[in-house]
View 1: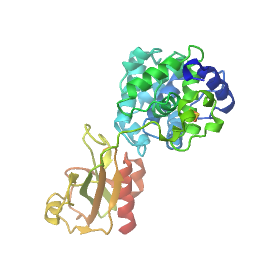
View 2: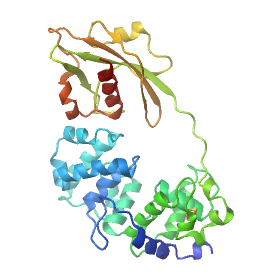
View 3: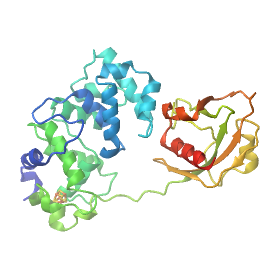
Length: 353
Ligand code: SF4
C-alpha cells in the first residue's frame, strides 16, 4: 500500500500510545502540555541529544520553574547553567525569549505558529513544534528524524539538503488534524528509536506496510546526502596564568560571535594553518612572564571547524594586575560560564601543572 492511501497518522498514534518515550518534558497522557517546558526542551534539543539535554532541562526547571523565573534571572546565571550544552547563542536567545514572553505577553506563550515565530530565537522548526505539542495546532514539525522517516516512506531519492522543501511538503500531507501534538512526538519517537539512521527496525515499524523504501530494499541508504566538505582545522595557544593566591586569569568573550558572552582562558586568535610560532604567541601573551608550553594538545570540534589549542603556563608576580580579564580561584571555576572547549583547557592545565 502507498503512504498516500495508508492511515499513517492513525497507525502512528496507536503505536505511540503503547510505546511513547517517557521524557522529562513530556506531560502524562491526557494531561495538557506546559508551553514553557515544551519550548525549553525544544531549544535545548536543537543540536543536542536527548540524554545530553535531559539533565540540563531538569536543572533549569527546578531552578526556574516558570518562564517568569527564567526571565528574572541574569544572563550570566543562564550562561553558567547552560555551560557545556554548546551553541551558546541559543542560551542568550533563550533568555531574551523568556523576557519577551514575561514582559510582552504576560508570561503566556503565543499559541500560534506565527505568534511564536515572532519570539527571539524561535525559528520555523521550534514554532511548529511548540504550536503542535503545547497547543495541539496541526503544524507540520520537520526535524532530521522526520525528514528521514518521510524520505523512506516515500522512497525519495534526491539528496539533502536540496530536497528539504519536498520532504516538508510530503510531511505536511501526513499531518493530521486530530492529536497533532501527539503525532509530532510520535514521528520524533519513531525516527529516534525505530527508523534509525542505520539499520532501521522495520520489523517493529507501524508504517512498514506503506514504506516504499522498505519495499525497494533501500531504507538504509535514505535519505541520501550530498557529501560535506571536510572541516578546516584552526590552531592557537591558550594562556594558563595563575597568581600567588592560586587564582587563574580568565576573560569574557565579546557578546557577538562564537561563544559570545562566555568565559574563556585567554588565548591567541584561532587561525587555520600551522600553530602560531613561539615569537607570535609570546608577543600576544596577557603578561610578560616565564611562559612554559605544556605537553599535548587540546582538541575540540565546533559545527564548522576543528580546533587544536596548545596550552602555555606561567605564574604572575604579586604586583601584576589583570588589565584584560579577572582572577578566579580554582575552586570557583564551576561558577563560571566556561564552554566545553574551555573546560577541556582547564582539565588539561590542571592535569599538567
Ligand atoms: Fe523507517 Fe523501516 Fe518504518 Fe520504513 S519501514 S519508515 S524504513 S522503520
